[in-house]
Structures are given as structure tokens and as C-alpha cells.
Amino acid sequence: MHLGLAAAISAGVAFASWRLRALSADGAGAATLIGTTVLAALGWPGLAVLGTYFVSSTVVSRLATAARGNEGDAARETRDARQVLANGGFAAAGALAEFRAPGLGLWLATIGFAAAGGDTWATALGSLSPRPPRDLLTGRQVVAGRSGGVSWFGSSGGLLGAAMIGLAASAVGAPPRLFLAAALTGAGAMLLDSALGSGLQARFRCESCGEETELRRHGCGRTTTLVRGIRWLDNDAVNALASGFAIAVGLALW
Ligand SMILES: [Zn+2]
Image 1 (tube, protein in one colour):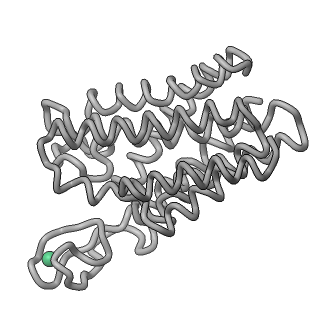
Image 2 (cartoon, protein in one colour; image 1 turned 90 degrees about the horizontal axis):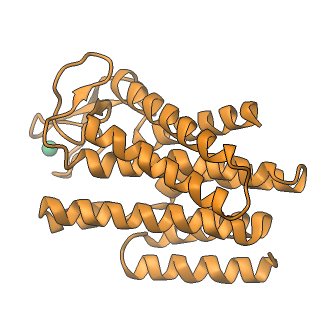
């Protein structure tokens, strides 16, 4: 696709997302960069894959928020540049492989977005799970939304989300086995995401209210101290690692 058209489509969608508060201003900038890369490298099939990822992720997150009846959560679903790059950066880099080997860029980008979409679907549907999630590594019940927690509801949703993106690619001419590769790699990335979230992700304790949090700065505005995990390994870093893993597996499967 012509670079100008790729940039125009991406900027238009990013602008609309910013208006709808699905993206922050810097998040919209990052999304424009990722969209332009993917569309310029992959053309219309890339638009089908990226569009399926974007629309399905946005819709499932919003529906889950509405179903929980907690509209105040909508603000927390505004993605910033760090989140956007953590989820889509590797997929966009993978798309560039199209210039070296025709077909490889679509293959890698599909698998990368399947991993990111699977994670979003798993988080959204997991939040609606009728039973509390269990920690993937310890098996203990944990509060919903905690990293590392898994439920059948969330995991099935994640597999479905990843499969849908593989299906979109196959529908626009990618080899049918990409559907399988995307679904399986997406599921593998989801497991890695939960394992890292349970075992290594940073957890902090708020100095003011004593609550445990995954955020460096607690919602109450006070600073926190590290109680376990690796300081820099936050949810975005875990997502980026899972998505890099998906791209590496995708390359091996090519
Ligand atoms: Zn606090």
C-alpha cells in the first residue's frame, strides 16, 4: 500500500480512538506508527488482520466493562504509547519481513497480533468469569484481574480471540495453516504471559494504604515499595516479552 494512504488510514483510526478515549494522545501517535508500518508493508491483507485485532479487542474490552456494570473502568482502558508498543511493536516489526520474504511479514504480524488479541480477550472475558481465577503457578485462588491468574473462561476467550485473527488472515489469502499457527502461538503466549505475571512480575506495596498493587504508583497517588518480582517487569514488559516470544515461535514455524 502507498505510504501516504497507509499513514492516512492509520492516523484517522488513531484520531477516532483518541476521541473515544480508547487511546491517549501518545498512544494515538504510537498506533499511527504501528498502523502505517503494517499497512505499508502488507497492504489490504494487513488491514484485515490489524482491523480484526483492533475492532475485536476494543469491542470485547468495552463489552466486558459494560457487563461488569463498572463504567468508571473505561478510563483505565485508555491505552498509552507504552501499552500500544508493548502489544503491537513486535507484530509491526514482523510485518517488515515482507520486504525480504513475501508472505513472511503477514505470517509474523498475524501471529503477533493473535498473541496481543488473545491477551486482551483473556483479560476481558476473565473479568467476567463466574469463578475466581487461580494463579497459574501456585494454583491458589487470586482476585480477578491479578496478573498470573487464569480461569477457563478467560483462557477460552483468549484462544478464541487469537483464532479469530488467524481466521481473518486466512480469509484474505494467507495459507490456511496460519490459522492454526496463530491460535496455538497465541495460546502459548497467553500461558507465558500468565507464568511471567505470576512468577516474575513486579508487585509493590503502597506505603500509604498498605494495599498490594502492580503499579509503581498506587491509585491513591502515593509511592510504593517493591515486595516481590523484578522491578522493571511490569504488565507492559510482560506483554512485550510474550509478544516477542510469539514472533520467535512464528519464525520457527515459517
Ligand atoms: Zn495506596
